[in-house]
Length: 597
Image 1 (cartoon, one colour):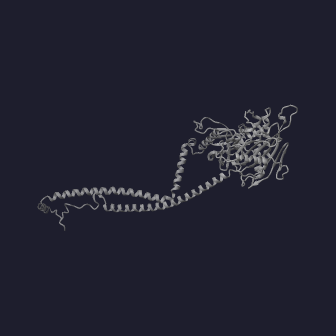
Image 2 (cartoon, one colour):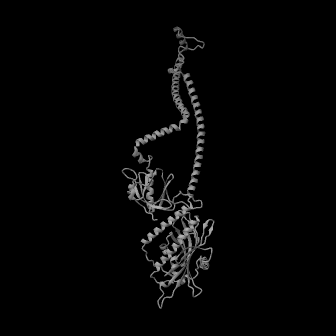
Image 3 (cartoon, one colour):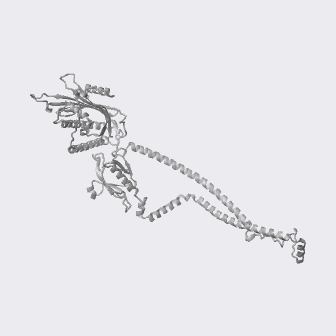
């Protein structure tokens, strides 16, 4: 089915006036289910919400579904450059754009809307009021802080005590400093007075003192009246003893509080270390669970999605598998019929080498293998299977008969198929030429997604890599094969020459298997003989006198896994259609042209 996408929005991703992402709308292909597959839908991105409608004209009837982008996960597909998936919890949307540029535009717009959703962005703060948001944030921070430190109030109390002790100690240091300064000044004055008195005559001093009666004798004979001792409270009324006791008590309290703080911090460190270890262990378990979940998710995609893988443990039953494959093939047929009716064939001038150039054995590195395959097909493929009980006639339409022999290995269907057909108006050379020529391959082969010639071995042998269109829920297949065209000369002059194209799987360093596709193995041969009925009278041979007897054999190992009944039903349906489509194409291409024997 053809996918298309168109989107409409302004040149800027953000509206400069409102500072909000602009609305985006357009057509995307959305995966619906395994019966209907991809369907075009009108998708609108607006106000952080992604909605889809059946079509643009039906928007007035309401959307068919929507996703809030605040918690959405956008995943570009690993291989499909046009596809991206959007998931919110268990809901998954599979979308395809027209080309990678449109996909990038949609992804960037969705990410922008997602970033601007909720109250966490700068523009949302402006929209909902910055003061209110800031106040709420401050309140939340305050509540968080209170709850977070509730268990640590003892340490905060001890730190507050330390602040109090520090203030007391600073005041005491200032007081003691003043006292020490005053003491130093008093001592200096006292020494000065003593020195001046001692210089006078001691005898005169005693006589004068006796006369005035001012001498106070004591045991030591000192002069207490002249040199009176200092006040018990010291200079300026400072209680030195009391201050010393207070200072000692303050320092003891500081040391005790410091010791208690250290003890609390050691206990707190042990507690936080245990909590850290628990968090690290929890994180490790979560990371392991995440890795395991991602691994399982890669192995088994979302049920019902376009990535649903085939396999023997598939959750989809055999009947649903068959219905899905049949629906996908019907869609491909309808698309092919439409494209064929609209297609204007461009005539291609493909030079055809003379028949003799195809009758010789090549000299390239695979020549011996090609010759072995050619001889094998000439020996076994042309044998009549009408009386062989191992071959079953499964289709008979006019001149065409299709036989099948049922073979299974390890649960994989490997049924050889053989078809015989008679086509009027063409030669064996012409049939084999168009079957082998890669320049016209896409004109008649509708199952191929793309192909390329990996290596040209000779004029009649090439190595081709091609990928086939995926038929969901089966995995996509690719095949790498050598294709050779040969002319086998008849040993009896009454027998016709035989033209043969054999395609068989090979390996090549430039086309190694990938995880994107399941590599199939093939051994196919198109064998043709031309029968000419004599014209009437002297007339020249024309196409009405020609019959081409075709034998087509195919041995295919599809790889992977799919129900045997499905594979056999698909082979029974597709092989006759392929043979009729190809022979009709050859008749159309050769009509009115000179005969190529």
